[in-house]
Amino acid sequence: MTRNQKMPGEVTIFDVAREAGVSYATVSRVINNKEHVKPDKREAVLRAMTRLGYVVNQQARSLAGGRSRVIGLLVHGFESAYTGEIVRGIDLELEAAQYDLMLYTTHRRRAKESAYVTAITRGMADGLLLMLPRNPEAYLQSLQRQRFPYVLIDHQGVGEGGAAVGATNWRGGYDATRYLIELGHRRIGFVTGTMDIGCSVDRLAGYHAALGEAGIAADPALVYTGDFLRQSGFAGGRALLSLPDGPTAIFASNDEMAFGVIDAARDRGLRIPDDLSVVGFDDIPQAASIYPALTTVRQPLEQMGRVATQMLLRLIDKGAAERAELDTELIIRNSCQHPREPAGR
Image 1 (cartoon, helix red, strand yellow):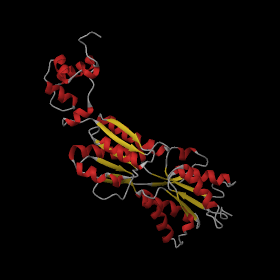
Image 2 (image 1 turned 180 degrees about the vertical axis):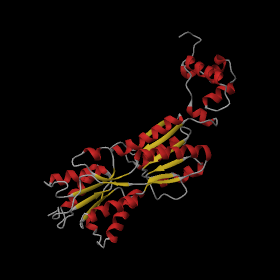
Image 3 (image 1 turned 30 degrees about the vertical axis):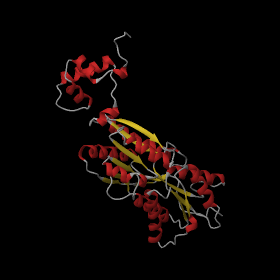
Image 4 (image 1 turned 90 degrees about the vertical axis):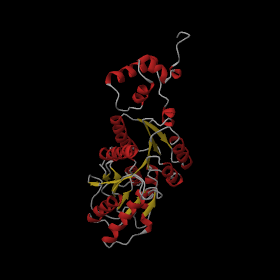
């Protein structure tokens, strides 16, 4: 590098304009992906940026009124394929729209969630996707006051004015429980998800509704509070199967916990579905590949990611918040059959 050459981070938009033989305004329009730039001039600017090693300052662009072309995504972690399937849909939509993804993982820590949201809204991104947030009440009002675009994914019950996409969780909980009842089960255990999340509340409500419709009295002892992780499914399965009058079937609020329930049943020497029927929720890819294949409620996870991203990009462009609820579907496989003796005995 000669004395007059600059490091990539030192190259300015004015350097690019001189190199391309265009105005500063033209370079600005190209960087911000604006229309009304002739193709030959756009190409000249892009070539100049490459030759000079120009690096876009995303935060400066945002402060100057442009767009960063970045979307922030907040997730609790990647313990389950559930997250990966939704992120796949998000990534496909952002790639098509020529946006980049900025990913933050909170590891289920509420303080981290608020801190990351604050950082993202300070010029780092044009909008925010929040997947199963744990602490949204702490910052949603602030996002709304700032008119910062955001969409909640798979989290119901946080006001009616914000943008959100979810699934028919109540219906899914009802359909799964109704299916077990139709097989002849009367002692049906339920392992909930984290109960500060709306989708968990809705699935439990659907379970109770199906029992009530069939004239089966709800037994609080048959409901175990989980947290969507496989370990809590194992703990819930052990607790429910240890009851004096144990369940003949267990419905878990997601597939990961259903896998944990199956682990607990096998730990007791029980067979699935001969001694215990098990149903999950989500239909992550592993649900079809375990033995026996898991009966579960399918959420269209990739589509959920796609729809949430489409909604966010429209919100950025037009400022109108939308809400969407995607259909669930009961997928019947091999983990359920008619009941025998209660599995806990």
